[in-house]
Amino acid sequence: MPTSATRSRSLLLIGAFLVIYIGWGTTYLANHFLLRELPPFIVGTLRFLFAGLLALTWALSRGEAHVQEGNWGSALIGGLLLIAIGQGALIYANLHLPTGLLAMLYTTLPLWSVALEWVLGERPPFWVLLGLALASGGIVLLMSNGLGSDAGPLQWLSGGLILLATLLWAIGAWWMRRRAPFRSSWFGLSLQMLIGAAVLAIVGLWHGDWQVLHLANLSTQGWLWLAYLVLPVSLGVYPAYFWLLREVRPSLVSTFAFVNPVVALLLGFLILGEQLSLSAGLACLATLGGVSLIIFGRR
Image (cartoon, rainbow, N blue to C red):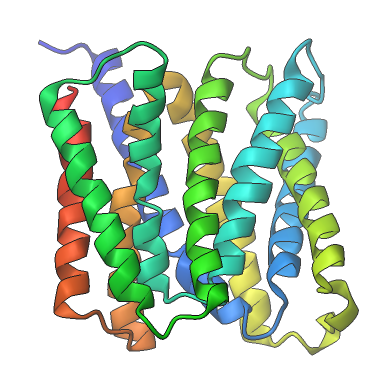
């Protein structure tokens, strides 16, 4: 019989997975509406600046703002690879790709996670290899159908950036799991978000986003979408995600990448009126089926 501690841990794990599954699945829609009013890297900068400052304020109020040896390395890894690149690429690509296709491209994250573990010496079983092949084929088919022959360089660049971002995200998640945890998870989260915001602000300056910023013209709806990304998403999902990285394998945590598309595709269909062709739908099924084999084939 499972003990009460085991049941409590199981409930915490289920709850944390639900938070990252649903929370990050709605991010694509929120970015879609914010990008109508704000340049891409401004969206990322403001989101993580506000969230980072709130997390830092909470840590300071609890007397937990202490940096231990090695913490700056973890903060740089998380801030650069998971936030600045991982979320920066997502927001930028949201300008040029439908939310459903964008979410599907993020299903490459579990592929990279498994491939990374394989390179590091853990040979995956047959079903995982089959899943890698099936999901990779689905991604190729999805890219060709989602972008099509009339897609321009920006669409293909956006797709390529997402694939690179998921690779770097997988490397960052694996790396952070092996580093000493922060004494205060909230202080660690604040450092990562503020570093990510600083990098995104610099990229925004290079991209010309600050020159066209008119924050006073941001609508009430825009402020509400930004508040949604800051409060329940950034300050709810990221703590759950970083906690899960300490509790279970990164390749299992990365399953959020194949649940998020279901949420994003449904929201895109219901709210944005986005459509997918039959071949693109088959590509989605192939990708999700492949990633499912990867996850459940290693358990």
